[in-house]
Length: 270
Image 1: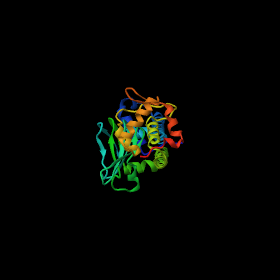
Image 2: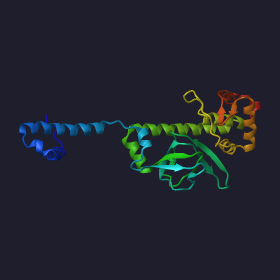
Image 3: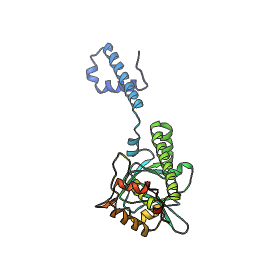
Image 4: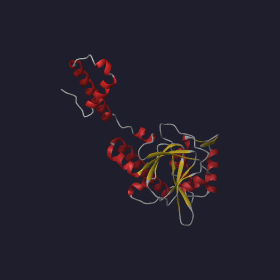
């Protein structure tokens, strides 16, 4: 079997020219096996390159064709509602919020983003402009992926397609849950649920402290109530030992009782 490739002759020629002295005394009998080894090495390297598994996390961590890193200071605008929609962003470090502003000027927070979250994906549906805005809550590092690069990754790499589709399904489930929460639960329960979600309750059996950068105004915008109501419930939760104020806001698992409580006397009008 001969391991010949279009590059074998060139590599063999350059190698023998670089070591021209040692090859002068060699017979063609010895050059033949060397040529075979060079050809085999070229094919082996090509096979390794083709068979190397695609790592979605590496794809989302390194700058490449159609991908660039962007840094934002806390409270900086990532993109505004109405901006051109031509890319999807992936949170590498920090937190951000997605907001929608009505024509009256009233603003609602529709999502809090953490590392591992995509946002701006509505451009994949053909929307020419951003339907919502995004703002950094803390110092933020994101990977910007051009629409064409994301489409290519989804088509060419099943691992990335699975990752992105899983994100879309989680986002859809979260939107449905938020709608049900808004329609049927009191503002107290909505706040308790939001705090549990922000603390990643239920993930890896360990909750995380909530950053103090998430203000009561932001919480009020998220659950659709006033800041005074949020302040009232936060004080109540703290007195009951359901949350703790330290360097950061610590949410205890006992707060889940508020969400699961079906007592109609706890229902508060927004």
